[in-house]
Length: 242
Image 1: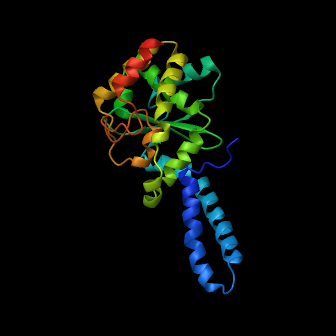
Image 2: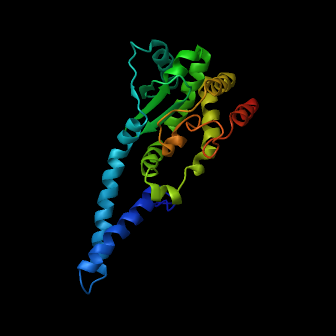
């Protein structure tokens, strides 16, 4: 069992902070190597722990989202309630971003999940497409690594860390989430239609950090940016086999 992910931006941040703290302590404490190193490792571990705790909330705020009440978005909540009740799942918190484009994301901490949709997607997609979209978001929420991915999105905002770490490693997860979404709705064409509808609206979201790209259904930096997502055509084609 792999306990430490040496490719994780969290681990890279820990190493960087340890080095940053160790250097001045080493020159301040004479004739000692072990003590400065121990102090650096312990203090860096504490800093990283604090950053991990605040990461999910910081990532959610970075998306510029606001809570979506049932009164404001009854159709959205009704569709979400139906999927969650049918499968015995806890309902995630729901947020919206005021954007005419079409995209959606999922974030999580250790205790809860939240989904974020653009108003463009909510207003433009029909009921079948909305259900397909929500099923994909639920599939993301069911991923036990979503909280880890959310934390990594926070650490990837650090420029030096982003140089050495990327979110390409989650690219294959997109196909699995598409398949899981189709399984939840029991209607793969609905998921296909939702993807095509988002593409038609345009998936770009202004002001969203690039580090959060792997949390979105479509890359928020543009449909041609395939570092974290396969092309829409590839994803739709893959579901023909389901």
